[in-house]
Image (tube, rainbow, N blue to C red; front, side, top):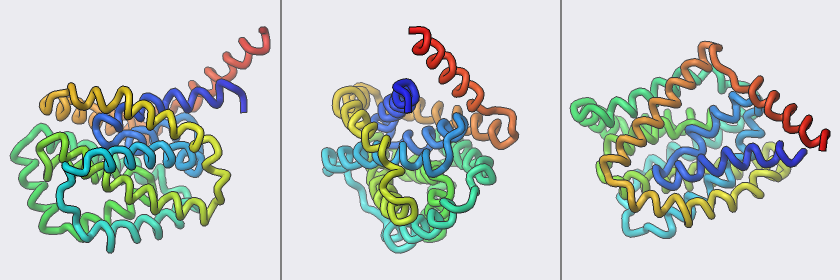
Length: 267
């Protein structure tokens, strides 16, 4: 692997780590479609993103225990087993593209819930009354696509209004989700899939400790909600275009790589 081929994903993870440090989510919900659009396989994407997400989630959970709200038992008995089973299947079969539209819809709903108090309250009641089913759907979607954070975003947006609680519950869930994913990927693919991801992970931690956490403290609750809504709408639109086969960043990725190679060869 050339230097630019190594540094380009590192740059993407650096930016996404900053987003996840502020919002509690970002590396998966935004990083997965980004790398898939750039032409990376699903397994390669997992190998790049899982270590960074894990280390940031560990830091967020460990450093902010005082903001921990109650965690549903459905996470442990329904969601995590569903992730393990569906991830085993998705590693050997390409389900990702077929779920782009479903994930985009979930992101649109999450954004709408943040903008409409009436919709937010209706969604909160629906989620509370169907918590087990909701966790099952979230687990299956995350295992199949690595983008179950779209449903997690809906839950965090509707149940928690304060940014500290919303970020903590999101980070706590992601920590549990990622732990299961790492185990399943190692059993299925071996440890070699994480060779570069492990090298990128410290970038995520440094960004969180130095940049992201400071940004989070200085971002007001209203700006936090607005920023999260903007990111959700942006990637909902990107996934919709990808689902319609209108958008692909793979040619751009090839162009950038070839031009960098040309420059280095000239030198």
